[in-house]
Each structure stands twice: as structure tokens, then as C-alpha cells.
Image (cartoon, rainbow, N blue to C red; front, side, top):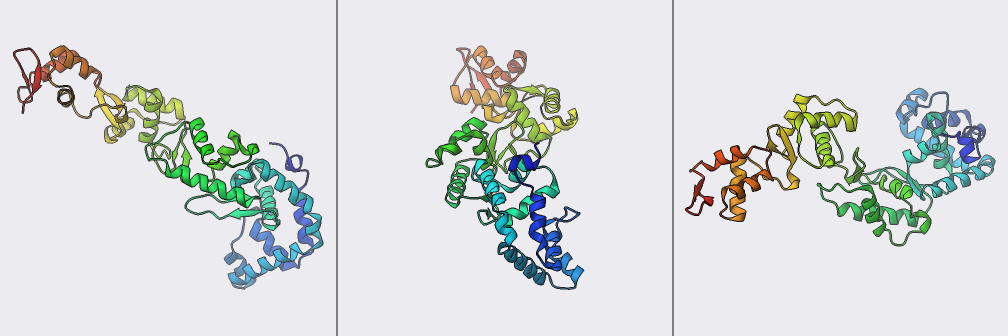
Length: 347
């Protein structure tokens, strides 16, 4: 990561120090504490500062607001315009609207330096922020019209998703673009669109880079069963629980004990047992239940079938030996064989 001066052409700490010099001591120390501009990068609460000075938190807020307003009228503020313009250029280059964390981390990983940049964002006239709520993360923008379009597109995109959706990134970006018909061509690139997607709290990306509703277990992976689902889905065909455990460790670099993995597969109704220790995804169309249930479902759907037809149908659903299927067919409580050699269901 390049030094901040190399990226912006200005030195945030030097500019902030010069701005604060003209303030009364208490106003300066309140801003330093509130924004983490002093020796410690930790930001101090209104209540903690109030206890330090023996005043109410509301009085601290008044001092903070008065100090910020005073800075905007100071000679130092006018002298900092080049820095504000440079920050505006950076935000515009990142898409015109960007999550606060993404913006600060793009510019520097240094926490103290981030605090100084954040202070300039709060102070500067070109910069507007969108408060964090249930739908979006806190973000900064310089173009209110563009910010409104992006937020509206994110809402529409989210409303079109179901909890089961897992969408490849390329397809998600294409869908997003369809909701952004009138944006400037300079913003029509994947990097900007990914940053805009990150603004939404409703849409998220799982460890495999697939997008869907952020609260879905397919996206917000909480435990072994969710990682198992992603592993089996990525593999694309049934796996033994030992293979699932191994695949989780390989794909996600996390421990997955064999016994734990097996227990989670048993309990999760997204999986279907299709053989001795073999699991598939229900969404692939596999019938739930034991071999007898699969035979019954096949006969319900296709009507009378001979032994070979039934074996072929069951082997599409279960990894079992043909003999196991034949044994189940001999259960006269459920199946009967006609004179033509075909089996039907006992009514």
C-alpha cells in the first residue's frame, strides 16, 4: 500500500494539526479525543470526555459542534481546500459513493491516519454521508443524485432475490447494471459495481464469491453445515461425509472433524442421504427417504414398471446395489407384481 501522501498529494496529519492550532485549548482537546487525533487513535465517547471536564455529555457535544463550525470559518479551512478537492477526486474515482471502511482502507491501513482523513471528511463541504441503518452501511458520497440512484438500484436488486439464491458474481453485476440504466459510463466497471454492492446490508457474498441475500445461510456461513453445503454444491455431485469433511478443510482452510460433519449433514434438510454415507443436495431433485420411498415415488410418477426399469430409476437417486432395490420390491405390503412382470403400488 502506497503512503497516503503518495496517493493524495497532501499530508492529513499536518493539515489537521494546522487547523486545530487556532482553537482554544479545551475545544482542541475535545476534537482530538472525539476523533482520535492525539497520541492514542482510540475515539473517546461524549460521556467519558464530560467526566474528564466535569460537564454533561450534551455540553461536550455543543463544544464539538462549535469547534467544527469555528474551523470552517478559519483561515486554515480555506488553506485546506486543495486537500478537500483531492479527497473529492478520490471518492469520485472510487465510484462517487463508497462505504466508509472501504474508503479509509483504500487510502491507508494506519488507524491514526484514517482518523485524520475521517476528520477532514466530516469538516469538508463536498462530502455527504449516508447514516448506517438496517439496509445500508455507512458511506460517503459527493453526488447526491448518483447516491440516490445506487441506493434505489440496491433495493430493487435485493427485492428480486430469494433466500435460496446463489448467483455468480458476473451474473449479479449484470443484474445490478440493469437497475442502473442511467449512470455515467465511467462507473460501468466491475470494480465500482462491487464497491456499490458492498453498500447494501441485504446483499452479501459467500466464501466462494457467490452472491445472495446476506442473511441466508448460503451466504452468511455460520458453521460446518453451511460450509458443507457450499462444498457439496461446488463439487456438483454426491459425496461421502468423509469427502465433505476433507473438502471443507481444503476449500475454506478450516477444521471440519469427520464426526461433526456427518452429524451436521444428518440434521440439515438441505441434504439427502443417497447411499451408505453418501449425501446429495435436495435441490438437485433427489427424493427424500429410504430406498422404498424412492421406488414408491418412481411408480407414482411413471406408473407400472418392470424390475429393470425400477432399478434404473432408483440408481439415479441412490448409490445402492441393485440387490438392495430387488429386496425392497419383494415387500408385498407396498408393491405387487402383475402377470406382465410389472410392479405397481399396493393401494
